[in-house]
Image 1 (cartoon, one colour):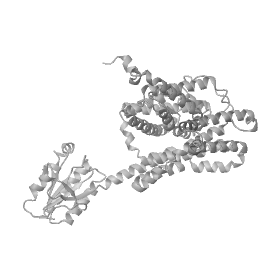
Image 2 (image 1 turned 120 degrees about the horizontal axis):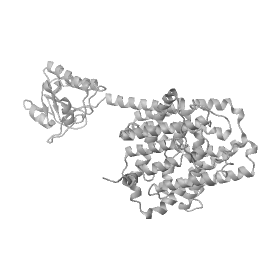
Image 3 (image 1 turned 30 degrees about the vertical axis):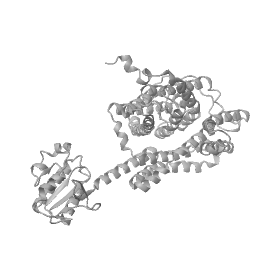
Image 4 (image 1 turned 135 degrees about the vertical axis):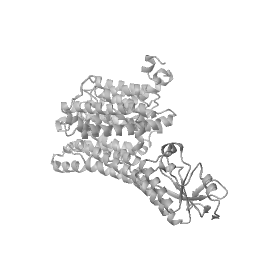
Amino acid sequence: MPSIAARLIPTWLRQYQLSDLPTDVIAGLVVGVLVIPQSLGYAVLAGLPPVYGLYAAIVPVIVYAWIGSSNIQAVGPVAITAIMTASSLHPYAAQGSQQYLLMASLLSLMVGVLLWLAGQLKLGWIMQFISRGVSAGFISGAAILIFVSQLKYLTAIPIAGNGLLGYLSSMQMYAQQLHPPTLLIGMTAFALLVANRYASKWVWQSWLSSAYAKWAERLFPLILLGVAILLSIGLHWTTNGVATIGSIPQGLPTFTLPYVPNFDEALNLLPSAGLMALIIFVSSSSVANNYARLRGEAFDANRELTGLGLANMAGGFFQSFTVAGGFSRTAINADSGAKTPVASLMTVVVMIAALIAFGNALAPLPYALLGATIMASIIGLVDMTTFKSAWQRDRLDAASFMAAFVGVLIFGLNTGLVIGLMVSFASLIWQSSKPHVAIVGQLAGTGHFRNINRHNVVTFSNLLMLRIDESIFFGNSESVHRRVVQATQQYPKAHEIILIMSAVNHIDLTGQEMLISLNQELLVQNKHLNFSFIKGPVMDIIEHTPIITELSGHVYLSTMDAVNALKDTYSPIT
């Protein structure tokens, strides 16, 4: 049995190779430096002081690096959790107030507890119930809301709302508060960032080698931040009415007890915390699982739940807001050569250095630049490619995408996600309620049986063979019954009905009652019901029920056995 020390020290650290240290250190430094503007912006997006973006990239990152499932996933503040934090807390406290700050940490703690409990209960499998359509639709809708919400920093118009209509309405109402200098700064920064992000092959590669162009693209937001600070100082933007972030408090995040809500507040926050936990797990697991597959490493969904849960729980006591695995952070981490979580620990070192040494240096930074940074980075999350693919290949998944997308835009994040999930589950139930029941025949000279509408097969005048391609449950038992009855009417000479159960993995009570009733109906018509290829777990359920004990026909190990036993008296008809 491993010692206590062995259990406390993660495997990656016990097996660490010093040869990986240089690349881990470089990757950690690169990620740390590049995501400083992003972290500041996400804190503002969450309705928090910018410094909270740096706080959120310290304690939670350390905890995840120690416990999480992925070796290279970079955890920290992300756009989706930031806007969900703002949306969830909007009714309870004024943004930026002390109560709001404490409630943001409370929400992180609640999300962490839910994720941790899910990990202990081994609920990693729940990830498969969020369809690609719902996930892409939700993120795309949220991206548009985030984009519009940041216009308040580019225009100085106090935009507020829960959905797109609310944002646009408040923009129209307070349009007279537009501040032209702020708009000029914000739009210039946004245009430069978009050009850097989407036209880098023409902007940089025209006069730099491919490798240098890649780094120029990554470093540009940080260079723009430095230039903006210098211009803010030199041109006295603050005195001209341009809002800046002000001096960032120096020092590390301190241990702080989260806000203690009353019963109604806790009850109202719980659904939001649950939805945030679900989105965090799905998005973070998708990133971690993808990189684990590319690197040939194992991925444990339950350990990922535990790691994300403990990271958010710890952050709740150290002035953090809810964190998750970041798409862009992890991509930069991997591209920079990260091998182990040591890279994430180096990122923490960068954040600590920024808090200790550079707080005053960031004071002249205009909010307009942070808003432009978020807007430019969020464009790529609007995923119309998935919708086009779904529309061509799976209209039900396309419907789930649109339900989540439109729901988020009109009703807000939480309600939109619920709408998307409801449509997705409704689609699943609808599909299951219409199971494929095929009439089959024998491929000549073989023991294989195929759909009569797809293959040239041999059928028998006294036999009707139907393959049920779905488990039988309350949602589809009536459809299965109706399809079997229609087939018997279509082939009235068939007195032996064979249900091929090779695709049936479960039969619930409603399905069992349907089969009992079907057997009795066929017997009245002088027809016998037979089964072939019943799986062991299914037979365990029905073996001692009237389905078998009162069966008018027989149960056969294979369809070939059934045909050989029942076709003798009759000649085949091709």
